[in-house]
Length: 234
Image 1 (cartoon, rainbow, N blue to C red):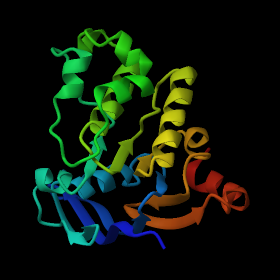
Image 2 (cartoon, rainbow, N blue to C red; image 1 turned 90 degrees about the vertical axis):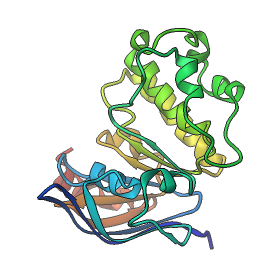
Image 3 (cartoon, rainbow, N blue to C red; image 1 turned 45 degrees about the horizontal axis):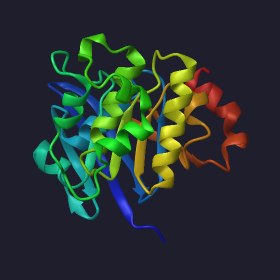
């Protein structure tokens, strides 16, 4: 049996007075890829932010390798081996691509070297000295993913990494996720692009109104497609 890397139980979340998470429950085993599906506003991004301690306030239980993190500061949560790639990417425009890569601190052993990252993302090697503002949307997304791989994080939280990108870039990012999975990384993805997410995940969690309302495995996917169309409107 794989170890439980992440356990989320009864998590409520707020931004100010806005109550956005209403008792989120799920777990992720070590080495597993899990995708959070749902319409916009279902609470998927808020769930990732709650895991990282970036939401206004949260209650319930969020354990990383058995360590309770509710109440922990974000930087301490990250040091448990979590890497977060936000939807807005967070590229520093005044720094070069390589300077952006070098910026995050090491969270643990086993972070990828610059050479390993450039092998995985050859586009970034070509643009190493280019300013963040001069990178294409696809290159910025590759950089946002690559940056957390340097840190040694083993649980990756990826928020809409395929959004708005050309099909060739989406295909490349899919290959990267597959490679990371083969290397033993644990991944939680939020994805609106179901075609991108479908072949990559071991399990799918459907969210609605700030709760997980359905979950199923890759093997169960064909039998659940009709129901998924209803939930997602795809």
